[in-house]
Each structure stands twice: as structure tokens, then as C-alpha cells.
Amino acid sequence: MRIRFRRVLGIALLVALGVGGVGAIVTQPFVTPLPSQPPLVDAARLRADVEHLSVDLYPRSYDQVENIERAAQFIAGEFANAGASARSQDVSVQGVKYRNIIARFGPAQGKLLVIGAHYDSHADVSGVGSAESGFTSATHTPGADDNASGVAGLLELARLLGRNPPPRPVELVAYTLEEPPYFRTDDMGSAWHARALHAGNTAVEMMLSLEMIGYFDDTPGRQRYPIYGMSSYYPDNADFIAVVGRVADFGAIRRVKALMAGASDLSVYSVNAPPSLPGIDFSDHLNYWHQGYTALMITDTAFLRSPHYHRATDIASTLDYARMAKVVQGVYAVSQQL
Image (cartoon, rainbow, N blue to C red; front, side):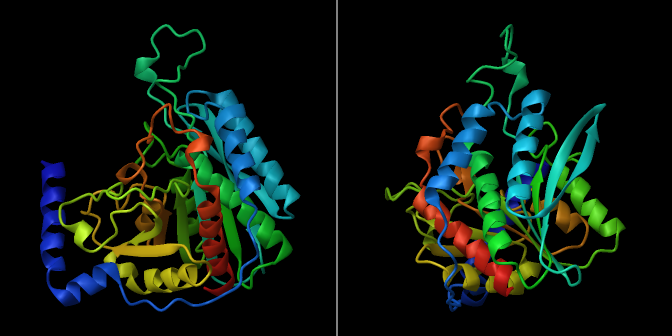
């Protein structure tokens, strides 16, 4: 019943899009890019990090505790190498201790910008059966796009911010436990981080979730949308990055979209809609909404374009690192000019 209700609301939204003013609110088609010249991002380094996470540290799922801890150690080491003030936040769930890894840049005072990405990958433990290893390629995805791409972007941001400190405090957070069975629960790593910020009365300007940022496809018709009619307002080529948030985050989306669009020639589209639109709250930004913070998702739209989502084929060779580098440039521009 709840799913049906959400879909009815989503369809109502698309009907509303037929009214020009409301359509402009949702899609924001006339945002003027704010030009900047961000440093070049090393696409080869992005690929190396994705390969390390999706191959050497495979699988990074909640049931493979040793590997997920190795991933945490790798991220912590890269943050430290970038010159960050790095720390970990324990996330204890059902007697098992996991970790968020946090890197801090910029001044001590001021409203915080949080940029995060989850480093765990999807697993379906019900399908393992008698596999001696505890996993198979059919049950435990390599998670190259979901979400080694977001983590690789986070690591490259750390290197850029280490060389060019931001004018405001920035926390880069690599989250544990975004995937099922903890997805949309209070045990998500991002829920732990958001609660800690709220408990500490931390002033937060905005949170950005990097949720799958590496899959692009120029084939006409490759891009899909959650409900009928959205293709009238958005491209059918999967050649853009999306900035996603609530209607209440209209101004924040407009600013982020303008900064990202001015940082490179990559197309940037945006959606601000109620949570009833399927997929709009499917990542770590959801937990910051719960704590009253402005939070947006930066995404390649995940299962709405990639045929590899949560499959054994989500491997490093399927990603477009040149365009992924441009996404990172856009997020870097946000960190410097928000």
C-alpha cells in the first residue's frame, strides 16, 4: 500500500510538471553556470582507486568484516596521505564494529560542508548457499560504480583539498553500511554521523552524497526515469550528472548546479521533488534530512541508467573516468565557492 501511495504521489508530481511554473521549480532549466577553473583531476588515479576497491578489496560487504575493515584502512591511509586531519567513528551493529572514516579540511570555525560516499558494496547472502568462501560473483557485487566511484571521488577531493585548503570547514566522510540489510535504517553509517553532528549542535551548511558517479552512456534511450513523463524534461542519453534534493532545498540545488556546471563541460541536470518520487532519497543524504540538515545527492542515476547495478558486471572497466573526473571538479568547485 505504501509503495502504491508513493507512486500515486509521483504521478501527481509529473502531472504538475505540465504546469510551466511548477515544472521550472522541479527541473530548474535556467540556472546560469558560475565559471571556475578547478585543478585537473587525475582520471588514471580515479581508475586505480576504483580497481583497488572493487578488485583487491572485493567484496566490501557487511558480512565480509575483514575486507570491509581493509577498505576502511585504505581510505584512512589515503586521507592521511592527503594531509587531512583524519579520524574514525565507530559504528557498532549487532555486536560487530564497523567504521566511518572522516577527513577534515579548512578552518576550525564556520558552517560545515559534509561530502560523503559509502564504501560498502551490495551482497545477497541468501544466495551464497554452500560456497566455501562465503560469497560468489552472483551474490556479492564488485561495486565499481556502486560505490567505489563515489569513494574514489572522495579520495581525489581529499588530495585537491590538501593542496588547496577550502575557505570553510569541510568534512569528507566515507560511510559504512549503506547497503542492505541496513539501508534506510538507523544503523547506516551516515545515520551515525548525522546524529553525532546534531547531538553536538554542529552548524552544517550542506551535505552532498556522492552516490555512483562513474557510469555514462551516449546511446539514445539509455537513460530511464522513475515515472512516466519525466523524459519530456530530461535527456534520454545517459551523458549527464544529476543533482537531486527536496523541494525545500530549491536554493541549495540551484547554487550547487550552477557551480558544478561552471567547472567543466559536463552536463548537469537537477531534480527537486518530494520524497514520494521513487529514488530521490535512496542514499546517505536521507539521514541528514532526518536531522534537519540540507542534503543533496550527486549521482549518475544508478539503476535508472546502468545495467550493472548490484550485479557481478559492476566492474571498473565499465566506468567513464574522464567524465567522472569532471564530476569531481564540479564538487571541488562547490567546496571552494559554496
